[in-house]
Image (cartoon, rainbow, N blue to C red; front, side, top):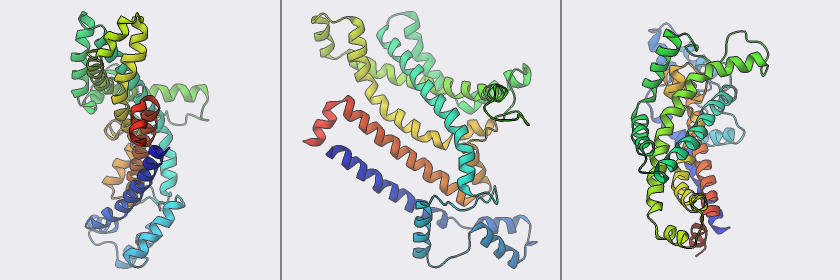
Length: 329
């Protein structure tokens, strides 16, 4: 319990630091969206119009920096991130709520599938080393993990969307699709998600394959496996109880971080496919200097990564008693 309590306190403190940095850093950047708009329109906006826009966007000064900081923290606790500039007048929370299901559904599903597929292939490659297929898998995994996934996305678009016209160029649904969660809606959603899913799963699985194979190879050289065979344990039990369990532990940290970054979306993939997820809106917020939306997304990404790491710490304590016993000692 002391181990988890310390981890929880560290999580809360790190969240506080992340929220504080999220307040400070955008205010250190020179200029603001209104200044950018005035430069774009070359002085056509009068000072009164610019001040009205600052008030509408919530960018007007509300006191000293300390006062603004506490107002900011109070709004965070209420879930109020302000109004989006690029999606005005929609509140930031509404933009996030609209985009989050698409990102979590696409990137979350792909991350889990890529982890399971890559880990299974990596374990097979280590366990069956010496066979032609098992020895070829690491080379394939290295090739896939080193390949830029935005390039692979463009390749899929060129082949399957432009040349063969099998899948759409981008988007998430056909226009005027009608009511959600109907068979027609599901068909359109899966049709549009096919290429992004292939892009993320194929490129990400290679990295998990190489990682799992390296972990399994190091475990296979341990003395306790020879002792387990001397006891007469079956190869299947040795694989599942000893090799898999010990080789999987180092991958959990990376998987936890990957799950945490799910809420940030896959910026390049979502941008290439014009997929309306959080990564796509994060890119749009940077381009349009939408500070409220940018701040909210950065904070959500930081919080998700921290929470995911906390969950991984819990799994570590459950799966590896040495972590729990060492913390109590």
